[in-house]
Length: 281
Length: 251
Image 1: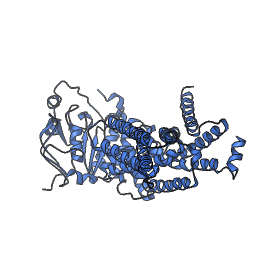
Image 2 (image 1 turned 90 degrees about the vertical axis):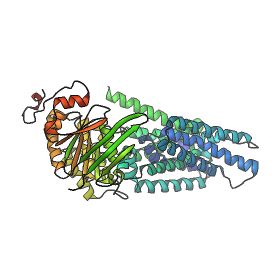
Image 3 (image 1 turned 30 degrees about the vertical axis):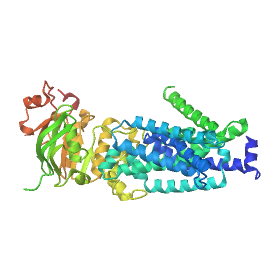
Image 4 (image 1 turned 90 degrees about the horizontal axis):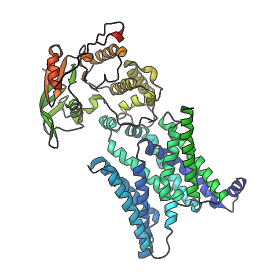
């Protein structure tokens, strides 16, 4: 562990320092949006959005590799795919009579399949595993500024709309009866969730991002009595989990994304079992 | 004569091929306290949802305060029987009540005057001391009072209560009826209830709902009329709120 601290402080190894800062900064967005995802019970929707991101990344990589469209960055494709998935799932769940879980599963699978087909048809080697499971060690200085920008957007919006989002998540029907455009706020919540997922896919990847979005908030939910307390606690837990997971992956020479997720999963199980033991000694 | 607060004119509602309400006509005048009575699935909650504009009638017209239910919503307070919410949602009782004015609140925190008004609403329903408690810690009866306070905090002219008597224990009955009387001094109240014996002390009119609707003054509602609405045997329960030991009042 001492070695980890030394390497983080070493000016010649910025990658680990960037990784650490990325985890700490991303925890802000994860903690706030994760709290909404958990309390509004839309983690399945968030999972579908994250998997659809591969479709956008695949299409962008294909456009670059096959047709030489240089400006088509994978991150741009990911944002378009995530926003489209959020809107499609959101509108279907609000208005269509189709079973919501069926539509979510379909969007989830189609997004993933589209991405894999595009990647398989792209000339040259494309690191699909990097997108699926992320690599926090490849985070650049520019990525850190992007995460800071996302944090700023989420902090400002969630401060301004705190009571409205809380009303939508707690009792949507009542919020609608009070004249709030509840459906528009719900779609805004999904859009913010989609943006969080896209920008944080770099850290733990498409498959694992949902765990980091929900587990810290779920742990915080066991202790918090107010929504803002749950957000703050989720941010702190997420910071501990990403830092602890990163340190463990460095010390044990394990892949960072999965190690962070296992750390979060173990923490969640410990809290669950601990609370059960306290309740029934 | 002034316009009624609620007016149903030849209202019918079908869900697919199933007729839920057929040619329903009734008025609720300003300042009345009215009970909707009828069996499960008879259409009581559906009538509340029509008043709120959450569903639209297949035929006929509904006006609330002279306009459409949708545009009158902000003047209507509503306490649902069942709420679809996460039972572990981390929210305080005061925050739940403050949601009653979420439409008027712009950004950031609520002003202290609004918090004070929310506490007054809680005090009116007799649960001011619960303000700081998590909503998830409350009993069913306490939650209902908090939800009535949330409805009151929105300053309604018409209050709709869906089964407010479901979780009220006998000792709290007379207190609850007193709250209803006080509220009725400044607003029209509509109560959905199976328990006519409970609300008969305060209700002036009973709207019997079983697909169709028949309106009676409370004083003329007899066991036969209720039996006819429910379509079978019913249990008569006499509530005596004047009895000092309420536990023996339930016969």
